[in-house]
Image (cartoon, rainbow, N blue to C red; front, side):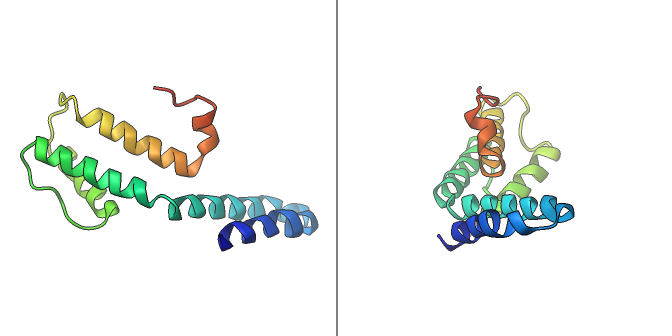
Length: 119
């Protein structure tokens, strides 16, 4: 993938010649590029999330929101705040945990591999 090649070039060719005061910025850009690459490859996870959110709404006998996964997430958050979902619903917390775990997998997969999110 082009993004991975660009990131490798940044780290291997550019970073060694960057002034010390700019090293943090270059590393931050490289990390953002890695996250973006993982996000681009997460299409199946997005469809799984869409299905999980829709199933929560069906379980609560509510109409599932339409739109992108991000729009569905925002609607779910708003509905949770509005009390549309019972906090005691056994299905809600595992789905929310799964969603958070997916976010961490994109942002910092080493944390998951280290077992810090075992659960």
